[in-house]
Length: 338
Image 1 (cartoon, rainbow, N blue to C red):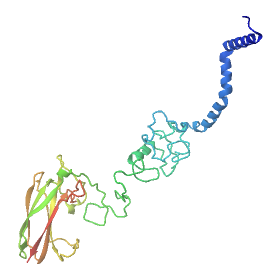
Image 2 (image 1 turned 90 degrees about the vertical axis):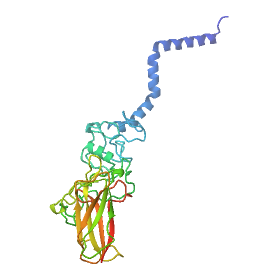
Image 3 (image 1 turned 180 degrees about the horizontal axis):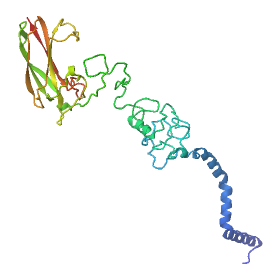
Image 4 (image 1 turned 180 degrees about the vertical axis):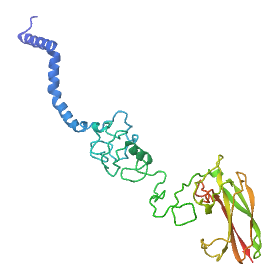
């Protein structure tokens, strides 16, 4: 059947369109794409350019090698410390992290190229990326507080540590002699494991003695190697840090002292010199308990005599213990002098 005029027109239009698409298709598509997408693309470019100018990633983008969401990169500032460079918040590292300043351009922590020209929100302006990294590792936040990378001190939660050395003390330095008040800068040193903590017990002493009568006290020690003694009169007092043997035992000695108690109803004054004092460093002792006999000369005063024995490290401090609830290496008895 012969096509109608309308059908012929439709066929002609279809053929024309097909020919145009075949010949001009790519160019026409490009023109159409520019026409349709141009304003949106231009707008996106304009919105993005403020962040791109300084090398930062656009908002929400993760730089190459970035940590997962919520994790702090190595050396990053704590939360709120300004990880988004150029955003105006937190540490701005002297006005933004830029490629010109040697940054990695990752919009986050400058791990080796930060030019800290200013102090930001209280952080140091020393220009050292290594110090920034150390601060994050040591837990010092950008405001000068102490804690972990989140501004918390998980090792000592809630504690207000006033000092860990003598740098802020107004007292004169301790010089190894028996002077006070002074500030002792010597490190605490080594502490034994709880199973090797030193222990001491007075295992023998009289209950009463006559005035002027010599008597003996028996002292047993465990986990104390009695081979270290720095004379206090020679400047060795609090001069040396605590030291352990290769087996993890405390090195030191023990003291024995006796003093008259003016009253048994209240703590005595600690300042008077004792009636008797002796340090025992006999190159013996170890993990197996042993006993030392200490001879005490007679006391010329009647009353109640308190005799005590306590372990000391090489510089006369009572040895440290692993736990706070462990009893230190000391013991005490009372003897009636009549």
